[in-house]
Length: 342
Image 1 (tube, rainbow, N blue to C red):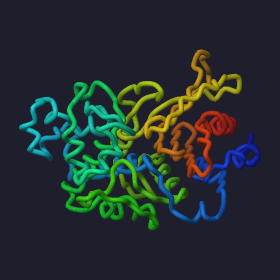
Image 2 (image 1 turned 120 degrees about the horizontal axis):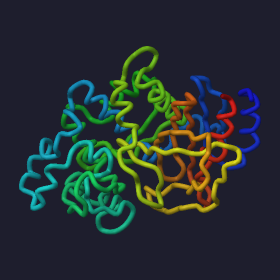
Image 3 (image 1 turned 90 degrees about the vertical axis):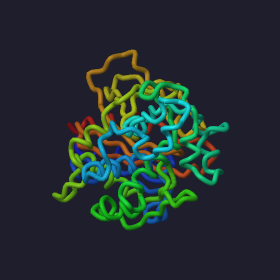
Image 4 (image 1 turned 135 degrees about the horizontal axis):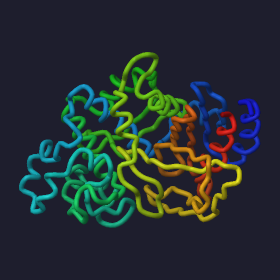
């Protein structure tokens, strides 16, 4: 099957889903793009928790330059006041445990007293996140937590002497040619680490392509290949209703692409930030299994990177309608068609 055939199939399937955008690049070539309208193509929009993966890239860049120490560095290095915390485990939380959401904080991402919405109603988001008690030993359990992303953003700002957005413009957005964006900040002026970034779909595609190319862009090394690999590899298995694993603010998973494979209709949907998955029936072993990692944002924002296919796919939505966006567009509709190109 050639790219034109794939484009024809996508053109039959994708527009009816009413996505805001769908961009597919393979081997560096744009083989399909769909926008709901010109506004979707030309106006920046919220990418929600895809912000976390952008922050992860900036953390990697800071590590490469020596502004951030090794990922095993304890939290007390950046926040000495934690040495007096009643829980002796808290000062020992590492940068990697923050990046992998395994810090152990008691957190309910989308509701309750220790949550992302509650954090945004306080006058000091970072302190709020740091003050939460630990419900798990650090490094043992993944709990989706935008508070730890805000802690990481504050650390990045502290160590580089620049705002997160300034650092991004100099070392990531600038080299990628990303000029149109907006980024929210907390009351202390720390740009939001877990959400709050607005970008164009085509710029999300550039971001995914940078990782596909192991950190290089037009011959320039932006991120070391070692940290691209480390940040996008599976660190810990996640708990239902999510599936797969989690890396450094990236999700990691596989999907079967055999035409005979069955995709279950059981959908695990939630209004929460960390529950945007469709469950896939894995009872039947398939010869064709794609390994991929991806950024994921609430409401249908995705950046998928599939190294073995040299593939990047961007999906965005704006929840314009009451019904939830389709959650299995990539594993069910896009990946099987692309595999036929091999």
